Length: 257
Length: 381
Ligand SMILES: Cc1cc2nc3c(=O)[nH]c(=O)nc-3n(C[C@H](O)[C@H](O)[C@H](O)COP(=O)(O)OP(=O)(O)OC[C@H]3O[C@@H](n4cnc5c(N)ncnc54)[C@H](O)[C@@H]3O)c2cc1C
Image (tube, rainbow over all chains, first blue to last red):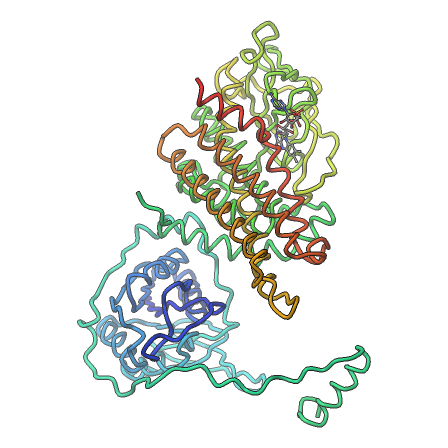
């Protein structure tokens, strides 16, 4: 089985973000980088599928500067077999459509049986790359999966719907799946596997070789929302405070209705 | 010269930090309170992650990584739980390493491999009631009897004692030889006839790490269990401690870093006189000193570790690293309690535990005075 998992490197979300000088993105200096959380579920699922199927090959693909190699090494240490690094120092300026088309161009003649992406990235959060990629490759896609099983060409996945409802979807043949929290618990890359990751193939491809579309959208500006007027501060004895809070919740909100 | 971590070292730090924060930290306070060792968490899990044999070659079940990776792993564990840090350090540096350095091929296959894979846990027995800093004062004896050695004596304050399966123990094999010369090292398995455990220590810090007495009463072990040459045990012990000091230095560094991180976060949050206390220069000066000492310790440790991995003599470097890092840990944790004020003194915050934990790093594997003796002797030889 040939499996592709697409990952993105994002800043640690605990970081203090600053907007960059031309207001198009955040400043990237002094940030701590890690694998996009949803992509970790994708990597774990890809490796589990490989372990279940045997005789499989997992390719991990990541677009970005040289800095993303460390995140790719983590995916390799978690069990991916080979890496494809699409070298692009200005990844942040690319639209979801451009990103998807880069991946589609790389994948088009590789006949992957199964492609995983995160359901969204933690920094941009557009949630489009997986579905656009499926569209471009003419494959079915199933989004926000929280459960995955594969048997003899049929993939059964659970999707998360609103209000705690789940849907069971089955797909025949190759497809793209976008992964949601709850799908699995990503493994730690063990020390021996970190050491072995060094020896795995990591191919570099210039982004220009794979990007053949023009962007159809552009981020005009990024900004912090204006500060709303300060919150309400209650003072007094705990018992009175509780009564007052209850009153406010009843009168001004619907949380208790 | 390059001060950056390699990709592997950086991945190892992230992996161990994630594991430490998610799985070790949540029970650190309660294990301290109950003086409880949790083997499944504090050792078996480390084995699964490949941390029980970091520097040993793959052929002996190790990961084949370097000493900097080892220091990073102990540091990151100790940042949230110093007891877990020393469990790994004693196992890896004090038991597995002398077997790697001095063991015969057969001993390595038989004893090192299960230690490196984490199937078995190790400990090191040097200290005795009358032989502390003065290890040459060892009174435990080993006498040859046919195909066996018979040991008699007691070892005290043994980290991982009782829990470990494999022990490297020093005993006197020649009563007539001069002090340091009549000592030999042995590999002793838990369950050997005549080998039992005595008192479990009640301690100020690292309370989740078991510290036990080892008792040998006509304990019989096969003759092939001598480690290194007869009469060369003192050398085995000293070489073992050279490596061990990198582990304890890293433990001290982790404790200091953990306390510092909490102190910085707290200082930014805590409001007094209508502003965050971090805005007071008096607090900033303290934080500046703490951060500077921590970074200096880290560089000394990584430099000693670099030497250890590259075949450069590192006896003095590891003594300096241990001296600096353990004294830094004591200072930084004391200051962290100060910055947290009354809250820091309570068990609602981990800094009081870290302050209690820090003290031992100035004592074991050679007190600070002994480190100064080692460094001084090296300088004036
Ligand atoms: C929690 C814990 C875990 C331990 N784990 C282990 C273990 O796993 N294996 C093991 O073998 N041992 C272990 N030890 C023992 C530890 O290494 C010794 O306690 C330590 O080496 C000091 O020996 P001592 O306690 O006998 O102190 P002493 O040697 O009696 O020292 C008392 C004081 O005298 C000072 N002093 C001694 N000699 C000199 C000198 N020449 N010049 C100046 N000052 C001097 C010392 O620095 C110290 O301040 C452990 C101890 C503890 C508390």
